[in-house]
Image (tube, rainbow, N blue to C red; front, side, top):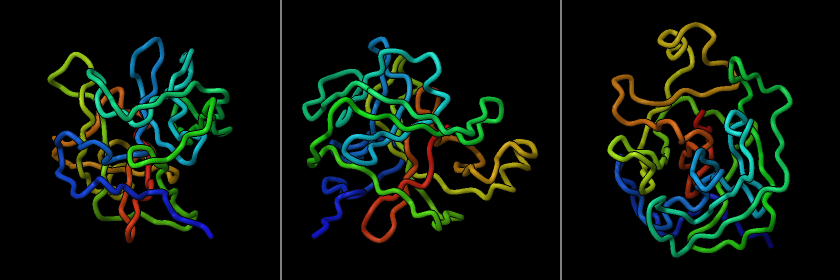
Length: 212
């Protein structure tokens, strides 16, 4: 008997874009730290692996992964942390174009799932996210000198050809997704790289992209 627990957030009753995320809303969201400071995000994909972006990792030493964390400034009663034992970067990652900007981290010990820490569901190879709205979470704030409480906001998926028209031909490859409002206002920022973009399919949240 297999019990599906990925992508389920029992405490996430509703989403209000652009506000503080409630405790236990995004159970797979992780915070990557080096030298005691948050510098990138990631997502828990099973009980011992985290998905993030490759460009966060060069030069990052003494990695520490925090799970169940809501705030970077205060107490997190439901938080646990792990060291990283293995880093695997996509073999075709291109630092110049950021194509294949993806990596996985193996945790030093397996994680026990609860109402505050669970993995996100991964999209099937045939999945297509061409329209609609997805959710991104981030810790950075324009009003703070350092990241604060985890924020959540909804962003529309934008066609790659439209993004290439705006950003320059070839900026967005077939391995990438583009999302956000054309007029700006709701977006992630520096320090949010590696965090997941998720889309709700039926009753579960599926990771549709990675902030890069």
